[in-house]
Length: 445
Image (cartoon, rainbow, N blue to C red):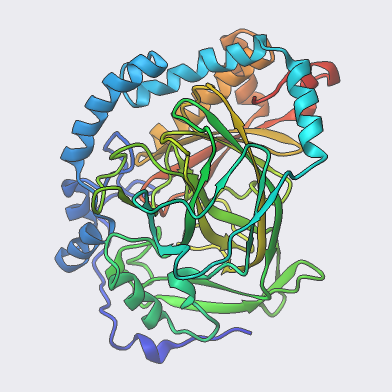
């Protein structure tokens, strides 16, 4: 099914004001983690739109700058890094330590855990277990699991606490977003605590099952909201509903246009570090921007069978998830993939003690994936590249100069998304370029 509700757009403000920045991905001249500064906001949007954007995403550059300074002092003790961004340098000794560690022990442990999902905990979506678009660390854990256990999330909710349903017009979707300033659209299930997890540890998240419903929606908001890559180009907004054929794993977008389905969970992360973004209230943080806690990565490769490694920032880790995509292109430029809900998400969680990882990394059957996240797309690219170089130097036991060259000739760098305040770049390191014996020794944990 495919529906347009143009008549519903009549009362939505439409603007012809265009973005003043000439850069391909918008204003990218400000360094730092994913923050819309006032000067950028004012250049990008007229008064009413910029005011709404500021209150929607609740970001404060001065608070964040103060946080970066304070957190740099703390992280220096933990990761021997001089600033928050400097924490990336700590990946180097971490990868090196892993390279020296007993790979045979890691392989045996992975093989053993592959054969079992451990105890399976069931976490349904209810008004007690789901919050709209935030990480709320004030809530008690729904459950506490042990390392090696699995979590089944049956009948998950669509966006806006399950209010996104086939036939809902774009005017209603826009109103839902505007009526919840500072919050994302995701229906966030959590928190789930991990027994004995502490800052400095790493969670290994294995995606065992991602089974969507038979419908999905792709939409871009009206320009007044200032979301997506090109809000002023398509000021009226649009929502399209599509059927998902789960037998053929395809969706008909338009006559003669079929989209292959590849379900992913767009948002899965842990409690973020204190004030990574200024909180909406003590312990409550916007779930829109991804970061060192993973979260809204929108990484197309994190499909069923893949693995995500996330640094732990709070005791208990506190896992949250939501935001299902039946399919998504790299970049996710209009704002969404094919948004849907799940019959079931099942993940297995393994805890690795004292692995001071600075950023999330991922693994599939064919690739190792390092990531870079920053408001400036160039800075995000730099972070992803340096992470890839350090991984290759440590795990393949080659010089950093050779790793740099190898990244240029064999590693693909892709834009993950550009619509969640923080831009994302991921580096796909192919496993098949390495000899079998070396490849078996190259492990994330």
